[in-house]
Image (cartoon, rainbow, N blue to C red; front, side):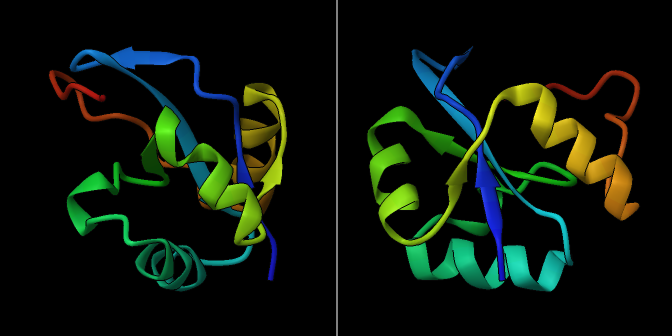
Amino acid sequence: MTLYIDPPAWPGHGHLWSHLVSDVSYDELHAFAARLGAPRRAFDGDHYDIPADRYDDAVAAGAVPVRSREIVRRLHAAGLRRRKRPGATRA
């Protein structure tokens, strides 16, 4: 099981956010996020938005730090990338 997280660089709602993804399945992603204590509402189509203050917790739990481009590359390669719906906003 490998999960990946990018640096907290995405602004939203007064915080910086990271993206947490799996390159295997959404089930794996949801299970890891639940162990982290991330609420299901933090799931944004193909990733979890993780606040900067939880980044170190995710890494300590086993998420592998990667650059943001690597997140997208891995999602595409696994067939798990979902495009944002028109008009939808992301954190």
